[in-house]
Amino acid sequence: MEKYTTDDRQILGSIWPDYFGGFSNSFNYKGFDLNAFFSFSVGNKVYNHNRFFGEGGGARDAARVIFASNLARWQKPGDITDIPKSDGVNVNNYLDGGGRWLEDGSYLRFRTLSLGYNFSKNKNPKLPFGKLRIYLQANNLFLWTKYSGLDPESAANASANQQGIDLGTPPQPRSFQLGVNLTL
Image (cartoon, rainbow, N blue to C red; front, side, top):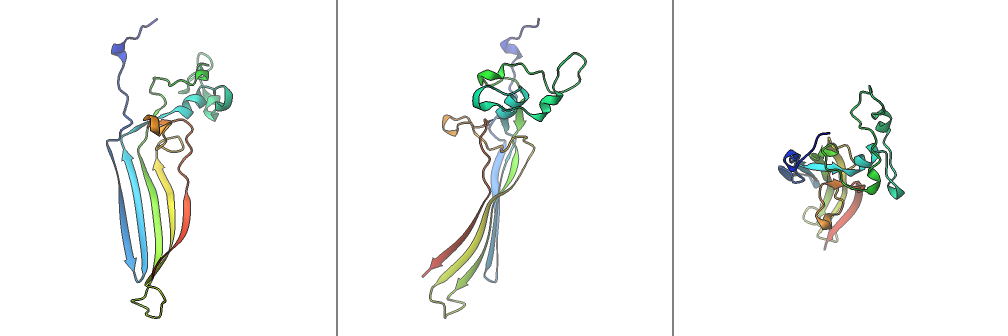
């Protein structure tokens, strides 16, 4: 049996991206305004703990999950697959030190789109107010990523600095808002 030592260890990735940021643009035309904002992250890794449980055959208590890919897991000599045999160890909710569940967390997210129309007393002196803007805003419209989990921005516990571990964190919701800004 082969023995592993600390010399066999290697860094497989980092939760910190090589590049991250955002870009936005605004357009105005005859009282209409359109604003779009995108954010991105490139080069970070996410530990998909959900996949760890799912491919491992689930876990005890409330964390029971089994992926459909388990039907293709290794079961007997001669099987050809990239899904390992269920080891039954996942029941203790530990983090596996291997790289199988470490995935590319790069993404491009369409965070915000806002469309509005502005009424102004300057253009229409009969208005009883200075300015009025009516707008519709949408948040988290699209997410482009190779990450197989629900959201590459997941964090098991952000307050405990566990960024980069996806442990069943719900994805960021898509939301829509209708609003009015009034200046007297």
